[in-house]
Length: 389
Image (cartoon, rainbow, N blue to C red):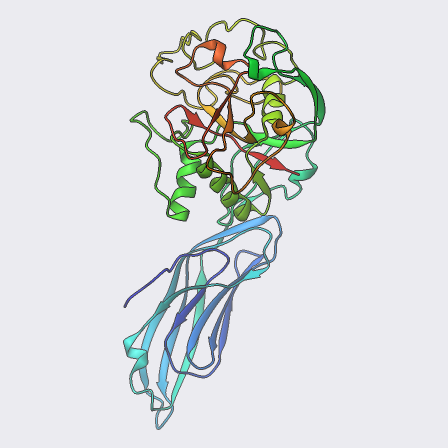
């Protein structure tokens, strides 16, 4: 028996080549989830999941039914019996019923002698579908500072996000002594939005890469899991944001440069959100004085290794440079508040912010900025996502 593509979300159609008359069976347990089993058009068995909750997702290790084929002449002898099983079926929260072809299965015993009349009985529909989570479907209504997850189609959690309040701030080289491209200092207003509590990790990016067939970036031998993903281009970051938007039904993208600095400052006007001196053990950078058994000159730190800023956001100082969706310009003229999401020219440069594990503390200031080509990939570069209401 050959199986192809027997795993997909949004319910399941499992097509089995058999000849019969339409019949059906229903399994329902726990309350709120139902499995219908129907013989369709005299040829196929269809499994379909129904979810009666908006705030719950369900995962089924298996769904099965018993199929009995009888000869319709004489004594009605049994020609074949088979247990038909669908495995690893997920139904996301918020959906009532979704069907999608997920496989095709040929059962030789049920294909014999199609010219003969057949009766097929479906019985004993069973499943082990379990609720895997309940979540707040009104994430957009959460207050500033609240942390939330959106959910992917398979019911798993997306990146941890924090709502940032609307506000106005001074952007650029407020303290003086910075670079020419950090000028002029100007006032910028930012609307309410959400941003990643942490930089996107390898674990989060690897799930996207596996789902879309993309090559996973190298971790330079430092480890994956909760370390920030590195060696990702602007295109890679934007592709991840687009995929996450499709998975969650929400609007994800990279932050604008203005949004990024607003978050990094978190209401302050000093070089770093804690003051004008880098201090010790506050960030992952060359000369930042990390004192926890990790050499800041050699590799990234796991996300969240240092204290969060007043907005509750981690690692805005050092660790990895973070892509934004704003085009780089030598002097501020408005592009820092704009987001280019597709079709950049070959000569375009996009802004990276925050500095990295190998850069001196001067390069990790809230005002510091660099521009790089969107196809560039390096072990110093990663990103975090923004999400619009």
